[in-house]
Image (tube, rainbow, N blue to C red; front, side, top):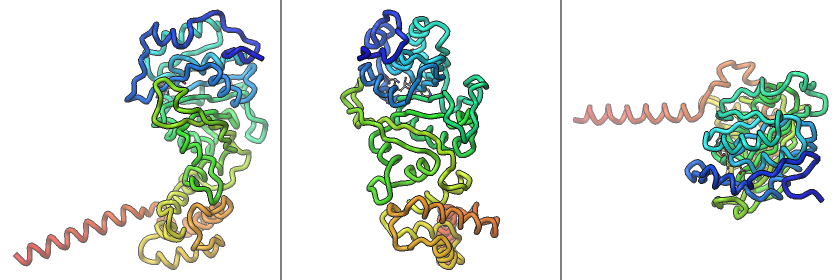
Length: 345
Ligand code: SAM
């Protein structure tokens, strides 16, 4: 059995422990930045094992912080490791790790939300989309406020085959608040079934790997954390542009406790709303009295395909915004009542 932090052939030379690095460089976690560190190398090894076989792989770790997961990635025998860290305080500690693994580590001080992944790895690693995933992995334990917008951005990238997916079906192993992980992986009928379930599962195989109790982090976060693994699908389950799928799914879930037609109605302007909602639901063969959480992936696919046809026939339809219409209606009402009051005076 490999010792913690040494899951594979590569052996890091003696180094200060992650705890010692935190003390040495005075890396007090900043609560307002949701910095919660993992110091237990058995847990960081477990996260890395769930990423798959990393021997000779190219890995990007997002938000390495004091470097617990970084050590496990290096110990797995990777060929190259790119570290992207926003907080400069962590760079000297990461440099220590880099020196212990000569030629393997690149450290980039930057923001993963704006970093262009297209040039992060050598071109020869590119695989065709239909082939096995490339030997490239993204791994990260990021603040929750970053991991959710980031996965939405990366799912958009999956649908366009750009960003990190210019290399093929790059796999991701990321942590989320436990409840978000449950949403990402929820099945039809499940309590946590939501917009995130459809947006992730129509593009990727999504696996909720395991839960890390809050106590395992320093400092302890308010919630438990789960590790989620994503592998982009060769064939998306809904073959429509990301924005269109997002619009339909968001509309359906906007009234999650009501019948699904209530949300679907909001795809259409007030004039002709009822007729067009009926037309969409009948053509898509979806029972209007199902609740949003009960809809299957194929029902979402039918709704998206039919809505797409309706948008092609009426080019103004896709830009229609229900909330904007409500806002304008309110403003008009307010103006009218002000005019009436003025007339009375
Ligand atoms: N991975 C380390 C661990 O597990 O102990 C640190 C985890 S801590 C929750 C999140 C890390 O992500 C911090 O080091 C923080 O500075 C970094 N971070 C936060 N936002 C980031 C961003 N937008 N881009 C890159 N790194 C970010």
